Image 1 (cartoon, one colour):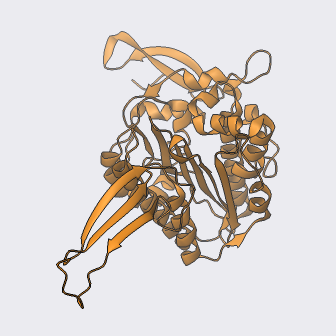
Image 2: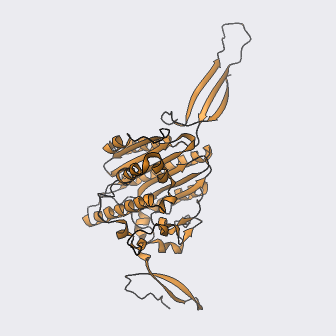
Length: 387
């Protein structure tokens, strides 16, 4: 019987083939058994040198494209040809862009930065057409040899904090999936309530030291989440009410506006290392073009509102954006939803409906203490709770 000896080496994964992008045979020595001679060389020996990178994200892109093409007809967009001409300043990392549309998909796009074992970045997203209120599929992965920072979610188009119908429609049946990967990929530490407004109860927010085992778990999560999104897409029915279509359009524009500001603001960008790295790779002007025209395509076309129109609570006295706000205030060190998708009561104040003024009111359970209540600035009802 043949014996197989494997020697594993960590190497950059610039050279790849589909579905084995992070593994390739780079040397095979085999002494063949010759049954026709009488020598005593009856042992067959193989030596295979296997190159493995625990960071490589190319297989994620490959799966996403193939699974989407299996479910719908993808049409390439001119964006990918334009942006695939971009080269890194250091000429070491490779930047790879793809963009498509389909009957229910406004934009499916991916940006993959392959810097070998020193740097891997994947930003893969799918935005539904405006006639559908589907969630936005979102995979943001950043890895270097020391740390992988991961966000994987079906970002809600409408609030899952205040809109129970929307939450039930898209997430009720997905809670077991979220619970499964919440165990395998634990909560990644502090996350501010500012960001939670755009996440669902099944969000995977995690950090870990890169390893092949963790990468494989993440790959399974990516596949399961993307297939779940495609299932929702296949079941989605086109909205015939123009008013509801306009709500979805504004919700998508609000999401794009938030993401663009978060990626470009000097304070917010510290929470988004992948986009900071993009600036280092292709320069500030190139990074800005990629953000607005590729990653968050539609921010200039789907609406005219600016960041402060959607988020006036960020406005400073001089009219500029208070980027520090995103790193202050309530943060969650543990997952703020349970396995049934029921959130921490404090989550309700993540909603844009909660911004306004703060009042101290008597605690109905303890008349000797006060509780803080945050009220809408335009609230018509009394801020005092019933007694």
